Length: 245
Length: 158
Figure 1 (cartoon, chains in turn cyan, green):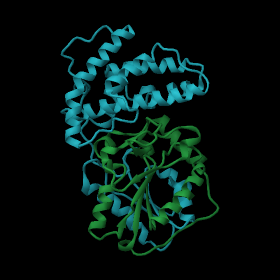
Figure 2 (cartoon, each protein chain N blue to C red):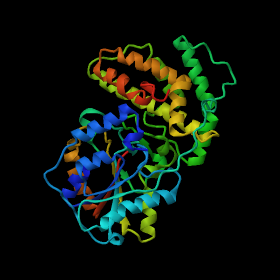
Figure 3 (cartoon, chains in turn brown, blue):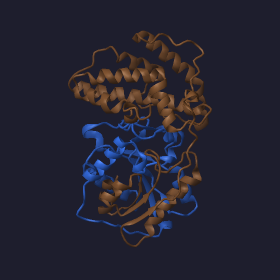
Figure 4 (cartoon, rainbow over the protein chains, first blue to last red):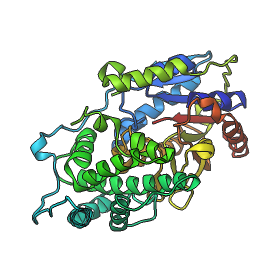
């Protein structure tokens, strides 16, 4: 982002930067930077807290009054976090029906559809509460996304240039599935933290189990795009390395 | 919390490595402008945001493109196709403004804190490295911002 700002300034547009990683803006020395102590992905600190967001925004804008570069400031305000819940309460899905033996892909597909169905009321609540959903990059419904992902466990991967486009499609479908689960999980009682939601999705759900299998399969592919997908894109590094296990 | 001391070793090393490899520039541009209450302001994100019916971001040659976000775009029309899975998206799922504060900026314009809000905001996907790859897109974007009367951009990374 510092580089984009540099080129905009050279073209005559004044910029002020929210800096999430101080070491990066220290290295690239943008003309104006507000250093914020928030998690990656949340440059304005707290969702659904307009007053907090406005204070961050005003602090970034206030840097425009400085007469000399670099104009920098620390955001002293911490983002209040939601309460971490224990592992026992961190699985929002109540499997009232027995989960099928998920050894076969067919059983896995059925269990995944069942899981999605059980989350549906929570996803509907999320949509009602926020007036929106962030599902929709792939154009597939959650049910179709799930069927597509399971199909990738056994179908032959394309090779060459087609592998790149295919990896892209798989990525978008997986993003949509994650969005559906995270929106559903966040709607349930307990106010799970982002890390707890991530743990739940990747480690406690059928969808997560499918993704781990798909990751392994992609990494065995001969196509670099699919290897890259498996190695870096399907599963967050914190999960893959066991940091959040 | 992005204090490196608080991060797992692998993430801290990764971020420090990017800092060590970051490009340096021979010029230090610093554009001054009118008082804040007269400025016209746009938001520029690197979250990989785009309209639901627009093209998702891609790796490779298309990775340094930007997407146009008309200022009146409803939050439900925006999705995220950033390639990284290593930053929080739950905040965005709950509230667009924690990533791109379109409503907060509109409120500041309404209250007279800034002059006006741009007709268009923009998003990149901030994954390509080195970031000097964004030069052509950024300079093109500067032209569009000027045509919109924008004199100030707020840069919002993820």
